[in-house]
Amino acid sequence: MSEPPMPTSVVCPSDIGFGPGIASRPRAPTISPLMAIQRITTRITSVVCLAMPTEVRAEITANVWQVRTEVGAAVAEGDELMILESMKMEIPVIAPCAGTVAELRVQPEDVVQEGDVVAVLE
Image 1 (spheres, rainbow, N blue to C red):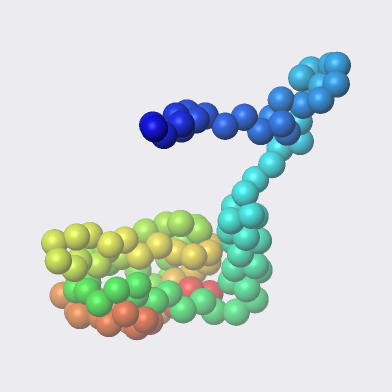
Image 2 (image 1 turned 30 degrees about the horizontal axis):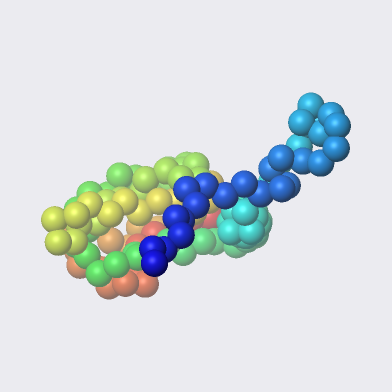
């Protein structure tokens, strides 16, 4: 006796709608719970960044390859502050929020451990 064939696609009733004219009505935009948590976390991080100096930490044990900013420079959220190098991979260190670089605690060729503070933003 052979196995029954597996379905190639699944149609959810909520995607089809019920009753006449349902397809012509716009649907409310939906996002996944994970996306909602990421958006909330980003907003909370932005508020925290405005309230106090922000320590930027190394995500991995690595060598500092390049420092792309200097003390006193204005940076935007997402700007590249420096590049770490580990096992021939380049790992950018990104500003978590907008601000001014108050301190740079590393320079090229330094070795940093995971969690070390590499810069401080105000």
